Each structure stands twice: as structure tokens, then as C-alpha cells.
Length: 230
Image (cartoon, rainbow, N blue to C red; front, top):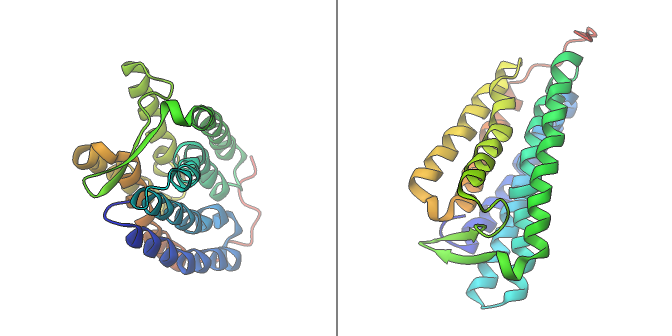
């Protein structure tokens, strides 16, 4: 995230009660929203991990930087491209025809993101550079496959599609603004913070957790009928 370890840590700590409220609201109102409700908690953990990266860089502690960066990148690379489609699938759990394509997208996201994450971890010392750049943290993944320029653009487009489109096209209209905001925040991060895109975009996405809490607040109880099971 931008600015400092204190800012990252404060954001992470603030998201914990927000996420707790969301989870309790999902249990009370609609269990299908539980994956979405857990998202603020997970973003909070990710921000705490980045606070560790900040502290490690400031103290010139490579071991702390490595451990914290590996934890942060687990979410950034491997987790979110699978989790967001599965979040939409959870909301669509009453409809088999809408649920299964989202589950497949989630598996694809976890597989592709996980493969890139594992490659980055295994070759951390050769392929990954973590440094402070203009009040942000830059995770240089340019040596992590795919390294070809075209393939890299394809990967970035696929990643963006996986974390935003399942929400944008969801039959549940409450998810659509979240997906649009995720995509819009990515565009802003690319245009204004390309040098530290991963860190800044994850911070923007973490801030969207407050909108998720609003969605859960406005969520009515789930209908008692069995719904569409076709």
C-alpha cells in the first residue's frame, strides 16, 4: 500500500471488525453471501502482511521482507483470481446453471494464479524484486513467467477479468457495483501507479471492503423458497 507500514497496519486492523460484521450479517441473512462477507477479513490480513514488508524494508531485514512479501503475494497472485469467481458462485448457489461456470472460472483462476505464485516463491531470489518506489511498495514480477510482453498482457487481462467480470455479470444485482469498482480501481492504479500496481490496486480493493459492508447491511433475509435449482 501507499505511504507507510503504519497506514497498511491501520487499514488491516480496521478491516477486521468490518469483516466480522459482514460475516455475522451473512450468517444471519443469507449464507450464500458468506464468501463475499469474508473478503474484508482476508483483505485485512493481506494489508497486515504488507505492513511486514514495509517494516522489513525500513529495517533492512531481508528475511522479514521475504516472508511478508510471500504472504502478501499469495493473496495478490494466487488467491484473488480464484476467490472472486467463487464469491459470485456462492451468491448464485441456488442456480446450478449460473453457479457452475463461476466455479470453473474459480478453479482456472486458482490454477493459473497458483502456478505463477509458486514460480515466484521457488525462484524468489532470482526472479522477484521488492522495493520502495515513490511512497509505495513495488513488487517486480517481470522475470516471473509469463515474461513475454504479449503473454504478460494476456495474463493481466485474464486476471482482471477473473476478479471483476464474475461480479459484473452476476444475476445478483448487488454484486455488479463491486465488480465495476474493482475494474475501475485497476484502471486508476495502472494509469497513476503503474510502478507499484500490485500494491496500490490491492489497497484500493481493500477499501472496497467498506462498500461490501454496506451491501451486507442492506441485504434482506434470504427467501425461504428453494429457488432455481435447474
